[in-house]
Image (cartoon, rainbow, N blue to C red; front, side, top):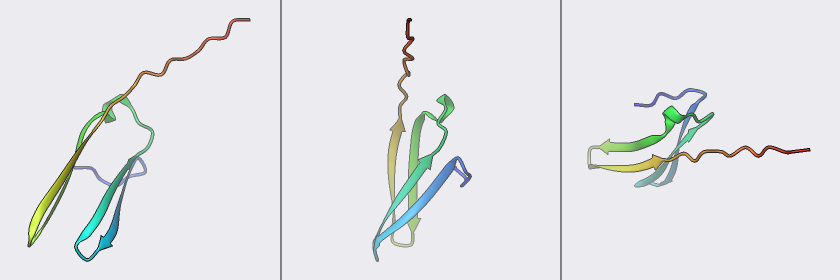
Length: 66
């Protein structure tokens, strides 16, 4: 479970009476942040879930030659 901190920001954007969009923002990403994330929502009339996988790509640093 992710707790809201300066690193992890969660937003709930209500679209209608029956719909909302949840958003997770991860700041200052490190290798340990990569992997799968799941959002689970439950109430008295049902439940829903969504998953996403965060991948990393190595950054190539260019060296200038003078």
